[in-house]
Length: 495
Image (cartoon, rainbow, N blue to C red; front, side, top):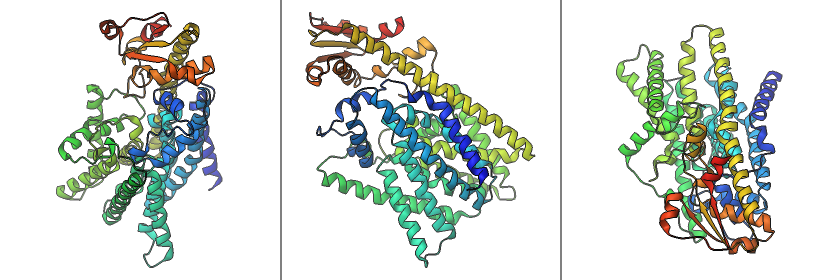
């Protein structure tokens, strides 16, 4: 790399550190972290991801959470994710630069895209939420796989040995991505999206890329089935293929695609104004793209626009061929980057001067950084730390050696929206982590273990949970002399 690239990379890494450095010292648990910290112990046989086709992720969790004992140790796991991204950011920069140069796109698109990557909500949760620590590996391996395949198709010759080395590398990295987190493999198609955006007439290269994407996906599916059989396990319900094209197209347009057009700004997935704004930006982008196709017949223009939409659909394919329709932020990195590239390569050239283009990019960059800073600190980290500190204090101050039962009354999922005016986005932002039914039991056991010093004592506790005070009252179950009652919402409202 040139010295200028190194300077830009240093600035980008500095931005990442500036936004996310509070995670270095924060102590808390968030949703699934409680489950993973308590159950991923050496010799336990516990696993969460093998049945979901994420064998490599499960091995990572076995090692990292298996060596974690206390809540404070989870901070080190989050630092592992942050360090992974710090290593991967230069790789993203280098690969994007090669593609941008090859396709004759504006050079500033490279640092602008990497900055956007750092500011996305999925980057935020992959650092703040250790349950998503695998995302840096899955998405980067997906992009590297697509980049090698792109190089093979664009510049390689099937008669050369180098061609097959590139293809083999693409297959191996693609399998790494898929066995880590399937949605990360969508990044494979980003080089081919840039190709289609930069050179609309070079469709054969894109078709080759799509073919490679589907072939590697098929190889993975067969390998997954074989691995499940060899481990005498049953595939999870989330891995079953479910074909419902019309329903999935409606879901894709209403949820994942619209979320991509929110860029770094959090909007509740059910927000009608948010959907309308996204649809307007989508329409504006497609109209802007048609401006670049002047001289084409309307049939060819329509075909090209549909090609872009089809490529975006394929990028999100892992979530579209299963029964569950759940477009959480963690599934969206590949699609978010694709939408960003589509929007920027289409709209920025409409600005007449280079100076204006750069000014707009600088303003947007500042907005992205400020918004990511706010998202991480106020929408995620601060409420998570406060909830953990509050509820841990309730347990520490009220647990006694005679305690044999815990009643945990969970807070309402919209508590933080009502109390603090936060924006709830799926199960990742603006939601109390103890509101989910699977969290209180391992959470309470972990805290009691740290208080008592005995896992046996924590395991012997009888822990019952209810979604709210009304359900608890209606149950007719009343505490005995050894019962600790935790009314989480009341405790959080008092702080």
